[in-house]
Length: 401
Image (cartoon, rainbow, N blue to C red; front, side, top):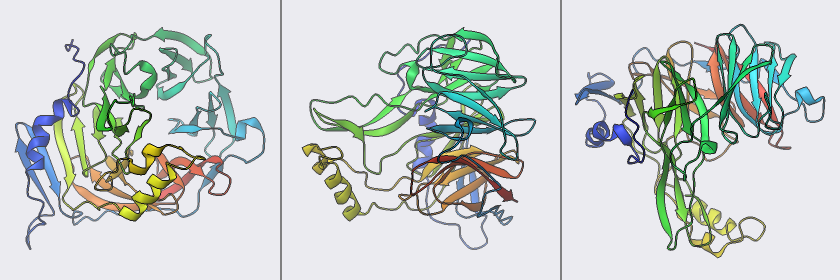
């Protein structure tokens, strides 16, 4: 058993390898050189990409969805309140986690409703806070951070057992912060999706982190794993919240690996099933400075009585540079999709695509107002938000490689 270690610095076990990466030359390759370099740093492979590889894989995501699930005003099985996750069902169809309705729903490949299960409560098969679902063989694992337990359902939505989960060991970062991110080896990986955002006696900007945790299937906390997840926070005596244009961690779990980024520099850190850093993927290109006029407008909005209504908003902290990455998704072709950060939901989302060795192999775009959560079988599934009504729906787009 790995020894439990809580309270690590923000980059945990990644810090040694990352220190070397930060010192690397960011200049592009000379004529005739490869579009990427690979260096070994204390046993960690550091892959620096200057341009996509000659293979130049550029998957095409369709402009219009293959499948749309959801209605503005319709039957309950086709209306959603707050979608947090859409997964492909191994035998076909989709599993949708609606945190607002506290329900999980299964749909066929053509969008027909097949099954709903879960409801608000604390009894067997009930939830207070849905926080991630995984399909594992003939079981569905569902995490509830508020009830601090894992519910195991069969594929018909019948609850088979409930597993109590150990507390995190850190009262400032309770299990209610955590999302069931995946499985590596026999461990369940839980990553924090929330921050404590504590107020401070003096205005303070800080990186608020929570350890990434490995749990045994019986609910016992085994260890910290990989690196902590976090977000940039600004705190005053009266308010605390995210830094304008601040960093927010993203992650993906699959193929016995954990992929994590803090969203700032265009880096992805890859951890093995033991939680040890084995590879750092980076793109050598300058970051975009934030637009100061936009920052001033956002600060002004935070003083508006109809929004924040706080005098502290006028001087709210802002990052110097825009974030680089806002999401990570693994597909079934052995590719890592990194969504490039964008300030507006109205524009198509750009993706950097890497192979498992860390080589930048291409780019892609997905439609606006859409956040992808899964890519498999030549399809990209995710959450589309109607720009006029704010209603959320499931959209599935074709992906051609």
